[in-house]
Length: 141
Image 1 (cartoon, rainbow, N blue to C red):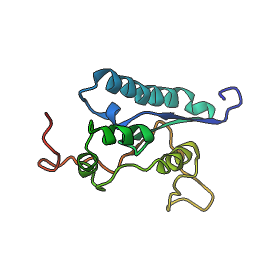
Image 2 (image 1 turned 120 degrees about the horizontal axis):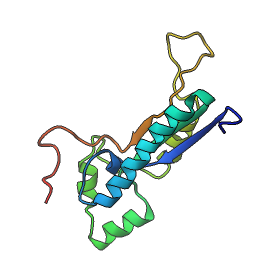
Image 3 (image 1 turned 90 degrees about the vertical axis):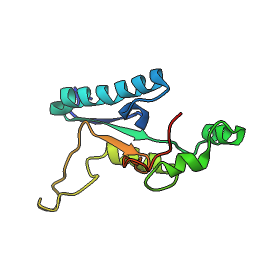
Image 4 (image 1 turned 30 degrees about the horizontal axis):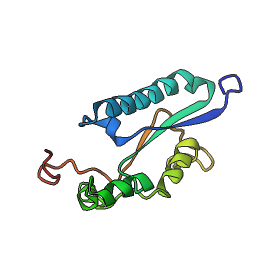
């Protein structure tokens, strides 16, 4: 991509990489994905390569549904701790990946038509907005 002076990479991280949590190895690994995204974006950006990341939260996958069905996780509690009061739907993630890959995610209203903003090193958090306000999140054990 660098030799072609064109390309896009989308890394999949996690909101777990944006905070601390009880699964330390996982959060550290996902934080590393976010950091390598920013590093490569800075390094390869001048060569025309865009590097971005998507960080989903709890996504309603088969694996997550199995954890909920087994009683290991409480679906209502997971959803309640997001601003949108719901889990991420699997169909939403490919859309975010495409948005992170393309240079046409947003148009700058102050720019003439056809001129696009280009995002590099962006970490798109795709999780419905974890609540940050004190008293809105459940107490953690």
